[in-house]
Length: 156
Ligand SMILES: *[C@@H]1O[C@H](CO)[C@@H](O)[C@H](O)[C@H]1NC(C)=O
Ligand SMILES: *[C@@H]1O[C@H](CO)[C@@H](O)[C@H](O)[C@H]1NC(C)=O
Ligand SMILES: *[C@@H]1O[C@H](CO)[C@@H](O)[C@H](O)[C@H]1NC(C)=O
Image 1 (cartoon, rainbow, N blue to C red):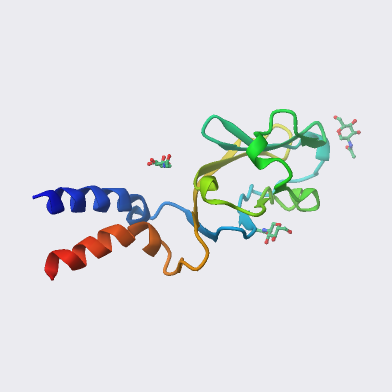
Image 2: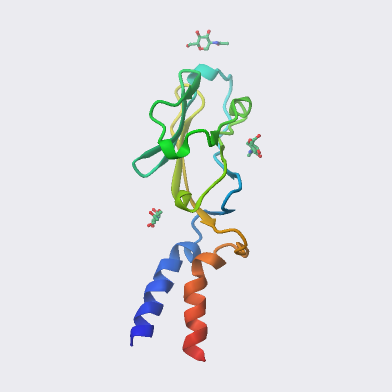
């Protein structure tokens, strides 16, 4: 009975992966690129760019008024974020998050306007950081591991 309940809970926790939401796997200590593409438009001007990378209730990295804005950045991300201004004119607002740790696991959203008078582009993704040595392929296997193990136990 208890096993069945635990199994149900772990299978449910595994569902976001099975549903196919964007999951970005990363090993702790490594750098990871969080992708964010904006549809390409015409003439580009750096002063039109507004990019906010956020976690729920947290600013990860911001760029506006032509430069990086660090005053609202959460301390945990200080010195670990990099945007690529040379790529903005190609519609690339990707973020390099450096030396990721287990606490970096969670949802991230990219909110970007790269051309004046264009709509806000929003991309969300789930960063899954795992301890060194844990296999992260195939995608989602780590997330679903408890459910897989319990399924094995169930049938033994
Ligand atoms: C970019 O925008 C700024 C502010 O609106 C303006 O002063 C500047 O002339 C623009 N640059 C170009 C190349 O259009
Ligand atoms: C965006 O820029 C980064 C850094 O140069 C690069 O690694 C990445 O491949 C670029 N993404 C796209 C979609 O071009
Ligand atoms: C991440 O976002 C998804 C989709 O909105 C949500 O179902 C999930 O609970 C979130 N995960 C965390 C850890 O907040």
